[in-house]
Amino acid sequence: MTETPNPNIIDADTLTGEMRPIRRAVLALGSNLGERMASLQGAVNAIADTPDVWVTGVSPVYETEPVDSPEDAKNYLNAVVLIDTTLAATRLMDRALAIEDAFDRERSDVENAPRTLDVDLIVVGDRRNDDEFLRLPHPRAAGRAFVLQPWHDLEPEAEFPELGPIAVLLEKVDRSGLSRRDDLLLEIQ
Image (tube, rainbow, N blue to C red):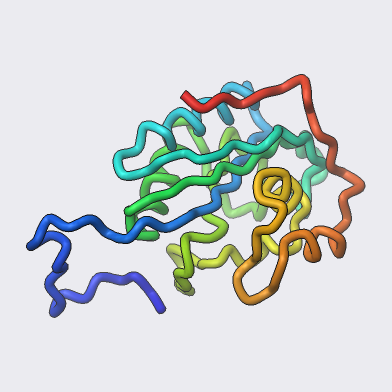
């Protein structure tokens, strides 16, 4: 199911002023250029400052070797943020892109190019979406230790939609390039 607005349907929430349902969302953060830790903390702050978003958890920070990146790419700092939100997934994606832009994220044609900040939507409630703008759940997250491990730290019993417990998925991925950085701490404002 996509969340593309249908011009023939009137949004009842707008007419009645009622709250939209609250959904749990998982966002993955990464940075391997510039002041990596400052970029991650800035992203957490920007997410927390977003109307209709409530940060419920921030994972430990992990340093990870680049995956499928150019040879000269430096290590990433990664973390996961759990939120509750009433925003539609597409609006949440707009916000993620705006946060990346605020931290001078440059986009290129090079796949997995180094970046000052990456904010990925991993899951948003039970939403499914499959178009160029937004794919939910994130199509590669279930195979990436730098997403699964920090998420597992926050929610050991969490399940990846249609694939099962993240604990089981985590057992299947290569974690050799992943190291927890207990000397680095992201804070929720």
